[in-house]
Image 1 (cartoon, rainbow, N blue to C red):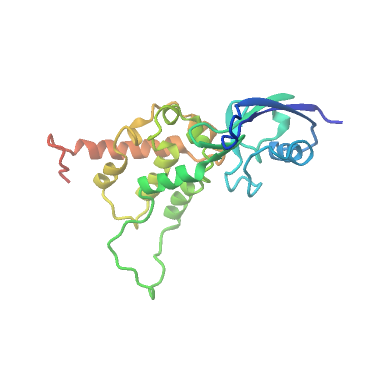
Image 2 (cartoon, rainbow, N blue to C red):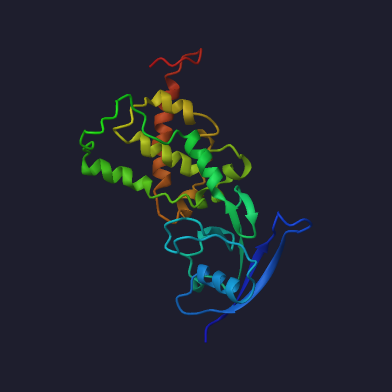
Length: 249
């Protein structure tokens, strides 16, 4: 016989006229090895089919089930109920547009991020369909793989004080994305060109350094380290601007 859990869920469907934000309690018995994802599915299947939340992979790969669990951004599929008190709250991630209840639209936000960060290889080389793939040192591949582990769950964005008060801030995930291309030898952009993208208050200089993003990343990406690298590069690029704001190199 497991614990009796009381899960207080945020409820609000903006598509229903007159609906108002509220908290609704659900009670269920805890099972061994239960994750919050399993608990929410049990609620939806046995108690309330109208409860909205997102999931795809159930293996901490897709990032869809991120939400505020007792005030902390986490993945529901990776959060064991055993580490939580018998009564806890579940709310949608802040910053992102609310779809309903616990579901938010991270897709539009991250699509805009990719465009703003110009998250693709920039090169003047003409693509040759018959050429062999570009060879790369294993060490370089490993360095690029680290930031590529981002699953765009939004936990770092939701935990960021700057992102919560400034909707145009690119966030830790955006800076991490830029870092990934900065260290990629195939990308031919200069530091000055990167500076045009994120060398401002909406980019790398908007971070206030609380590093909640680094603490709460479910994939343990070293966001603090990556941010420091990008900030150093952008600070050096900024110092190369003359008094007219024209790049000297």
